[in-house]
Image (tube, one colour):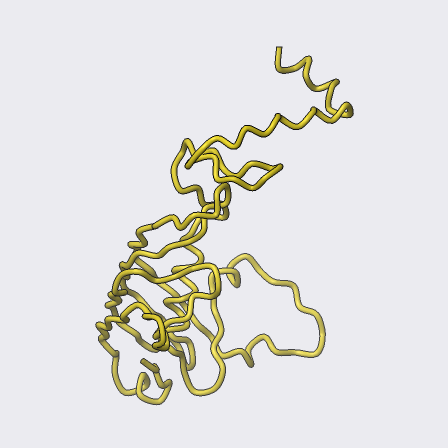
Length: 177
């Protein structure tokens, strides 16, 4: 869905969209990148309105579920994403200058759009990716992969000997005791 700045000059736009997850052989409606997969329909609803002469404000909510790789064992980990959002966008021309400009605190909460408007899919993608943690673990007690043979230690023990401790860390062992 595209929010055209000229249409927003005339009226506020109410939106309610469902984006289906991609299936093998079919294109995805919202591409979340190589490491994140949408596994449930994505429901987005809210309003888009013009604030000032060219600023767009999006308010609404979204809900879906995604899968990301566990950072310890590399198995898929499912994450629910349910959130409210209140976003402001300005035309990129407002900051596109030749000289360097200091970014003010209030500028950190503003996004930017190109041309005559903003795509809902771009705003939703950004919010989903920002809502995910930096490190994902499939479960709190995930044992991860063996550093020697690569066996997933959640599935079975591999029998590899523990790696010897690096002697440079020996001084820190005192703090453990």
